[in-house]
Length: 75
Image (cartoon, rainbow, N blue to C red; front, side, top):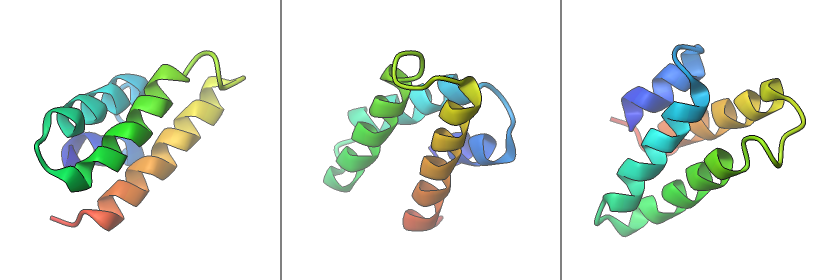
């Protein structure tokens, strides 16, 4: 998850796919503290086309969520 989040922040790879990857890993984790992470990245992934008018806005939202995740879940 940290690697995918770091890739989003760095602008590497497809942010939508990386958000989905973070969601899947957090959702299948048995750690309750990752439930909000799963929820946030699921929201980003599902709303990518419908909730955002522009891909740049969606990417910025994913980048902000990834930065927050990296800050809140240090290595």
